[in-house]
Structures are given as structure tokens and as C-alpha cells.
Length: 259
Image (spheres, rainbow, N blue to C red):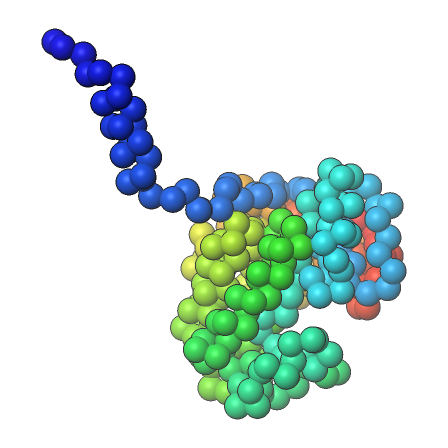
């Protein structure tokens, strides 16, 4: 068979390159494994001396330089955001219309959001995810993800919560960020495939830690915190379930006791 000339071959290669889809998809996401040690600090001066591979810190309060410093120390960094409640002290607070603000969630200056209004909330949450990505975070911890089980002031249903939580997961994944399911234990069977890890508060205190087994069975970390139960009462179960468990104080400063 007659071989094509060099010029023809080059033209074919050039044409193929021009017709390929642009490779603009994010790379592989970080996937923390069960038992991964971590530090969760949302208040006070950040203590970077804790020798663990994962830090979970406030996305608004810390700069890209802080994230880069933690990366240089070979740590992954999770961006804490409130996605289900409004916080009056955030720089974007005025962008949330009053019609989506519900009752207080028990924390000063915070109110539940009407998660049914994704037309309003999606662009606001997308902007927050952009912030986490642009600062170099590896993952997002979206908080207040179980409003449908609380007195929010809105008639939220389980279906509303599933729809919203999956939206939040998609917004993170579209930006190459891993994302954790915060609490929302009852919906874990439906959502374990949408999230890369779990973050839980007080499952031992309320006898609920077994509900987190689907994440561990899927090879995904469960980052777990207790506030009122001493480590001697929950660490044995945490080790059996392969949870990454800490005892913390409610203000979530630097202090910690790990299992």
C-alpha cells in the first residue's frame, strides 16, 4: 500500500487534534480511607503542629497561603462551609434574600435556609465552592445538611434534602473537590454513593455510629467527633467500626483527644 506523504500525515494529525473535546474535566478527586487521622479546628489561631494527614478548617477564615503551607507539610485540607444555614457574619451574607431565611438553628447569628429554592442558592453555593477551589482546598465539608429533620420554618421533606445534598455534592465534584456528608444519618444509604467521606458529630452519644457503616464498607473515611462523652466510652467502638474519632470542645479550637 502506498504510504501517505509526510505533509498529508501531519494534516491528519492536526485535524484530529482540532476536533477532540477539550480536556477540561477535573482530575481524580482525593479519597480519604477509613481510619485516616485528622484535626478539626474552626476557631482560634490555627495550630499546624498536630501531626495528622488531614486538616478541616474554615474556608472563609483561612487563605490560600495557609492551605499551601499545610500542603507543603504533606497534609490534605478540607474547606468547612455552611451550606444549609445562613450566617450573618460571612462576607456574602447580604447576597441571601430574606425569603430564603428561616428560623434560627441554635447558633447565634445563624438561620436555616429554604433548600427548596435552588434557583437562589445554587449560584451562591457555587461561588463558595469556587472560593474553596481557588484557595487550593482538597475537599469541602458542607454543614447543616439535615434541615428537613429540624424546625426550619419551611415544610422541608426528605426528598427536598436528598435533592439539595446531591446538588452540593455535584457542585464540589464539578470543581475537582471531594465532599463529605455531614450528619444526615437517615439518608446515608441513599447518599453514600454521592459523597467521598462522612463527617459526624455525636453518633456515640446517641447510639448511632453503626449507621455510618455504609461509608466504611465503601472504603470511605468517617471523620467523627464527640463533645460530651469521654474517649473511654466510645474509642473501642470507633476502632471496631474504623471511624476517625476525636473528642473536641464545642468551640472547635485546637484542643483534641484522639482515639
